[in-house]
Length: 345
Image (tube, rainbow, N blue to C red; front, top):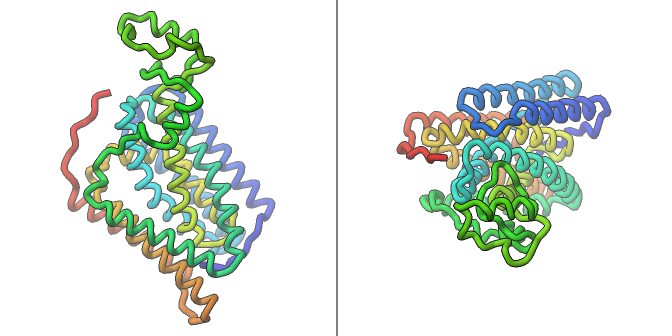
């Protein structure tokens, strides 16, 4: 883990906030309609978000030096790679809830907003815990290694669709809201008057929910889907935050790397969905990187304890992350999976 210290320089914080807020506004304004995002559009937008992140890396290089820029790029690339597995989970969630393509970007938007908030909280907690000593890094290393082992053991079971009706988030929403079981446009919640209007339609004559007791609001399947996505991402953060903290313990570097990686997740989702049969080996790359990060955390912790002098530099970490990602993509292209039938939405 690098000891580079930059703190929170005002100019850097202002540039980071300006780029982040501007990116969120652009993303919100450019994808307002309820229509599927094409692969071409998603790919171009994904390249745009990468360019924005590299722009901030250039700013860091000019104002804070090559090492800080290298740490940022390493953290950014690592978060991008780790997010791939999370996006595949989201695909399974959308499939189970039968969310049409045209509404998925709306769910993903709230997923991204939640990720931004919760990552900030976890980064603050994680970097704060590191001040307690090297034993915290050992705990982080074990968490990351355990995640890699669990992914490795899941193997062929990864294609099985989980029953999300038993998910904690699903049950929490049901505790607070009655459920309207059908989609009604892009609505997450329905008023009683809207439910009454739906119940008058002939195709809903067999739906009984809402006929007995009145309620102020009803949750739709989209609301349930958002809740499951949000909680799944929180659980994912328990693994990804310790992993990226292995790159640097500087909160600004860590959070900015995560932030810029998260901002491109909406469009990256549609790229991965279209190309997932050609990216079947990316999960193996994620597992390799998790083991690498566990080793990096372990080396840093034991060096503090026993002063053995072994560590991995920022440039070495960057080369490993980019190299493993490249190998994962190349192997996936050379040995793609079987084509899957396109869902009709």
